Structures are given as structure tokens and as C-alpha cells.
Image 1 (cartoon, one colour):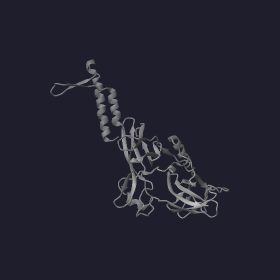
Image 2 (cartoon, rainbow, N blue to C red):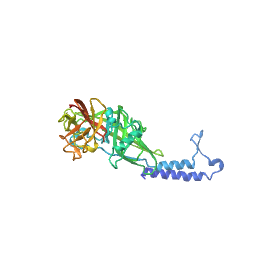
Image 3 (cartoon, helix red, strand yellow):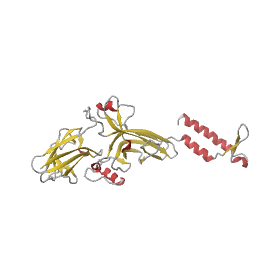
Length: 348
């Protein structure tokens, strides 16, 4: 307990003792303490009950909740001049602006209610991994991705969440006391951010994380997010934010095969990669890795034993095309919920 809290407790304890002394007054004097101003023209009556003193002592000794948000670090040193300032980044965000953003790795829609979306998210996570979806994500929303921990030193119950418009009111409640969180909010607060040392701009969102305990003590921490894949590419080719690009060509033979090559980007984890394809504008279908004996709507690679798709590596995609077709292929990072690139190719 710090010095100021200790002083408050001592003062309130003395008041409690004095309240006990007032109890020894006569019945008429027991309920109130009267004081007059220097002019002796106005009488002020104050009623101080034992419950008032007890409540005040709780507030004086109460500690506010504590929260800490994990700082986000860029893996590429070349990006440091772009974001270097006293506002450490808390995480990234991605805006859902394409219907394909709502398609999971199996080619199914992630759902139209928060319960459906939470179930879909849980199915796509690795074993033992837990991510809390705070609220429903709709078209046009930007999804914040961050990690945090929180605790109340007194063991009090807490109400906590994200204040999206910085008015001091929680707009997105968060239930767990720690973990990885996805929180959706509308894109009206997205703004450009830049550094004088760089000509590049990125999308940014600033919010506040607020926690309030059951006695009213509160705390807040500002959080700063950078838009995933949002930095301009002009005059900047370091690939620091993993700008992915892919190309596609007609495969050998006449069985609807396409060859898709990763042209730029960092190593892409296959467990976080989803490929979907549409033939001649038909509904998109999920393309999975070919199993033995499978030759349609699946992909194969000479380097398929590795866990990552690397720059320069090509995969062969078999589609259901039986003649000359136009195939649209999208590569998604299902872990981040983003479409990395979409390519079109004529195959036969």
C-alpha cells in the first residue's frame, strides 16, 4: 500500500473512532453532528454513519485493476525507421472488405452470429491454442489482434474491454483475464500514420483498454495498431510487412492443371495457408493437398515435405476443369484472416 493510501486509512480510522465517541452522546445528539459558521447565522448538519465510514475505508485502501498489453515487434529491421516513436505497437488489424474474407480454410462461411464465428475460429486453431473472439465481425469491420493480461490486486471482480472512440466508455467487453483476442470494430477510426524519416504511410487505429473493478477503481492503457499489409509499396521494396505476390500459368497436359508460384513474401506456413479456386465464375472450392489417389481440386508440390511455401516454389493445382476454363485462385492466410493474393489463369 503506497503512502497516500496509508494516510487515507489512518484518517478514516480516526473518523471511525470519533463516530464511536458520538455514539455516547444523548439520543438527540446521537444522529448528527452540528457545526455553525463563524457568523453563527447558519447551522450545517452532517450525518455520518458507520456504513459510510466502512465504504470510505474500502475505497481508500482499494487498488485499481492492472492491465498489460503485449507490444508488437516487426521482424524486419528495415521497418524500424517507419514506426520508431514512443507509441509501442500493441498489435495488428485487418479489415474485412471482401466476401472471401469470411471463407474459412475448408471453403465454408465462418458464420453470421458470434457463436458461429467462435466455433469456426476454434476449429481452425492448432491444438492447445486459444483465441477469444470478443464480438461479431461483419463486412467492413476491422479486426484487432492482440495479447493481454489483467488482474485486480484485491481480487475484486472486473469489467474490462475496448474503448473504440476514446470517450471513457467500454464499447467492446472482453471476458477472459488474459490471452489472445480478436475484436471487430467499424473502420471509421482508421487513419494514416507516418514517420518523418520515411515517405511511407500505413493504416493505424488507436483505442483504449479500460478495466474497472467492482468498487469503481479503474485504469486504462492506450493501444496502437498497424494495418496488416497496409504500408505503401512505392519506393520501398524491403518486403518488411511481407507483401505477398503469386503468379499462375497453365499446367502441362489437358487436365485442368495450373501452376502457381510464390513470387514474393516470407515463408508461408502451410498449416496457416488456405487455397480456394473458382472455375469459370462458379462457387469457390477449397483446394487441399493431394492425398494418394486424388487428382482433382487438390494441390501437390515436389517440396511438399516441407512445412512452408517458399519464394520461388511452385505448386501444381488440379481443378475440375474439363475443357478450356478461366480459373480464379486465391491464397489466404487463415491464421490472420487475410487474402494474400488472387490470380487468374486460363487452363485446359
